[in-house]
Length: 334
Image 1: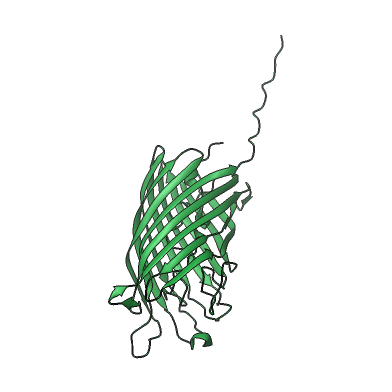
Image 2 (image 1 turned 135 degrees about the vertical axis):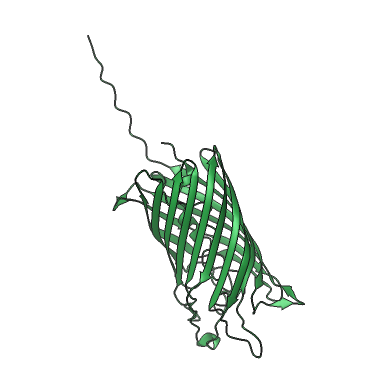
């Protein structure tokens, strides 16, 4: 069986790369604002599912940014920098089951990360982030039209490296995350037109009882395959859509009730046959935050990160069921 690895539906792989960004204050102080970095999935995911088998993907990425917004900490007028480097191994399971006409799959991802923040925040974190599971993804092929629809539910488990008085002293986060997804694709004649939408909801921090607001993440891809090569353009828009709920731990102060990030980027991929390599990056050209409780005699404390992201992802099939042997031709004797 031939498998086009460019069409592997690794929507959930993104989900696993959840990296705290120091004291960015887009959410609770010490949280990155989103549990899944915007843009991480769109360079590898579509609405289609691959053939039955067990697949693995390894993703490496870096984020170089600075903190912006009315509450951004500065020294001598210079913006505070953010540096994140991460590795995210994961597995995609496609057992060959169908439900309501859709192909079923499941994903597990375990991100590892290093994140540091420049002065005056001056933090450094290295460890294991929360495991991300997608126990159910369902992908429908809409006849021979080239259109595919996929939906699923991702779950972030609070089992990462957790430390500090508020549980945010390292890269793990002490709360559960629920992230439903809806992905629409047109895949035909080498074209991939995909729109992916994720809605992220978190439970309250089990230590501080602070609860971060919900986030909508919309990601887009237009790519074209030319033989073994793939080229295309990408983009995303991420925004907080509900308010934070503070707690007595913070004297009911709010980090930010709203933030947004908008980015554009490009992708280049190469199909080696057994392995697909995709490299892609983004520039966040617009970002902002508001709604934070004001510091004494100062303005809104809300802030968010803005910068550049670069991803490299390899995906390959580890195992596939044996294809049935072709029927033997009957022997005819005269």
